[in-house]
Image (tube, rainbow, N blue to C red; front, side, top):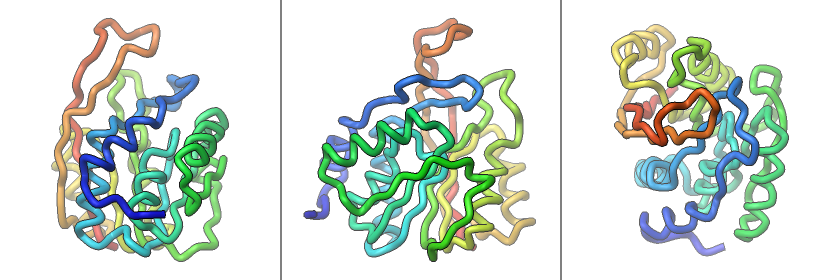
Length: 209
């Protein structure tokens, strides 16, 4: 498979990945827009974190970071999600895009036992954009990435928690090297949503373990 040479081309490929087929409010499922996913993955590629590497996408949803990593030259990209509907769709999309260096696993990340040497982890976990969301879900994903002994972690969080996160990462011996900032669009997909769309300010932290 020919590696993509331009960020815009990567974004265009990712635009064909559909949103969650049956979004579940308890999992806080919001699909990462292609423009954000392509920007973060392109930066990760530029930093040497993708090409020839083993990539894990925790809470992969419909597989946008898994597939993007594969398109950018990962030796293997593995997506893990607890939601069977999302995993089934991710498999279908990767097949249609002729991406063969991927693997999708239905599993709760808390129960997943890894037999791979993981180089890079991407994760867009439930980060508390809902008022009634369980706090700290994103930190459970960070802890799992540490358990996987990954070399590099890219993790999304609410920008409002940045100061806390910097201290948390430092206390857990995670060296933050970059912080990427995005306006993350939240569409009206759940019954309790009032506005058609709203933007939530998020950060994606790159940390080395």
